[in-house]
Image 1: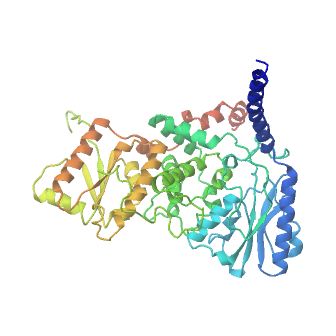
Image 2 (image 1 turned 90 degrees about the horizontal axis):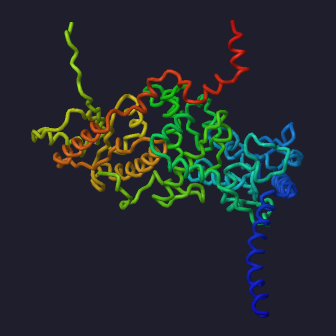
Image 3 (image 1 turned 60 degrees about the horizontal axis):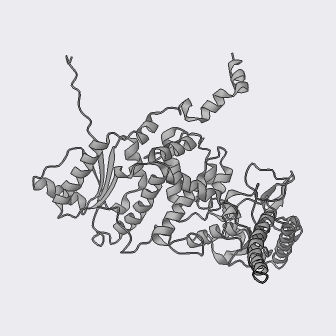
Length: 334
Length: 174
């Protein structure tokens, strides 16, 4: 007894302690040290100034601080002095790859461009390269080891924590940029597993009966005002003329009426299937809070399950819907 | 004019998007072989199943189709080598999307019918028509088309209507 009981106590204690420790660790990691973002900012400034001075690039697309505290906006800078104003903070939510697409003409024509990219932005860049929209040699990618950004409509005066982090960042699996020319910051702390709100929401909707799923989306799409912000912000919506703007013949009604709203959101999700890198910018800019990223994620999951394809991991010449295998699943076809 | 209106039972509308090389020829064979199949199906001819865009299907539903059939050549028989392979992937994804949105996938049927399979065409069309007859009309997309404005009951506008301050402001408009 004398020998056994301490042993048992010892045997029990570490397990208990470890699980408690790991929990404590996770809670701590969820609140990212604001100093980390400062370090990333410094690294970005140094690199941007260096490449501008060496004339490796003609400009750098990055973030400048906004006029209010806790805000930032995208900017194209062209001199080393301006590079000293660049920042990276949890307010740097934009996906800067957008500014390199055909939809925003002219930036790339002047020469090689530097771009600050978080993991999710890197996926968009890879996708755009795969679709021959941009060339790798035209870019100098300043990758950011990103610990997450603010969600929308949250308190931005507080440091980033589990309460105000963006929903996409909770389930992020691209914290570390791969294939960048330069990496800013090094995430040493293991990022915590936060409750995956989006995955849970998706599972919840899928578990609903069919009529309730329809009612759920109908209610959400009913609020759509067809401002097309989701299209304008999307790096992959670079078509010169959108199918949904055509009216001869008109495939999708373009006034904010029920039929057109439903059709627009279905077409948008379908056109992004197998391309969307999951930056969730569409959802962020939506003034009516429609959970657009749920549709994107559902399609991404489907294509992963069916064809083992993940968008934006590396530039790929053909997306899942532009290629085929002779033995693809056809159980749904009579 | 008519002394008494005749009440007709529900007849489903089926829209069939078919490829010209296989299923259209198959349907033609069914006709020339004098096989009988329901007249509920409206056949639309396309060069290839690869030409059929998912918005066509949406449009069909919006305009009142109760069921949609997409049919083309068997895999490997495509006149354009790979059109139906691409279509197969596209419609697999589209089906998943419609399912997630909450559309009953029984209303969307895909099939491979070759030019020699008049009998299969008859079977596919008959099956789908009978299934749709049993399921009744498809109200979802059609009702969206007919709604001019979203009803207050759908939530968003109700919240506005319940907002006292807003209501007061609204009422003060003369």
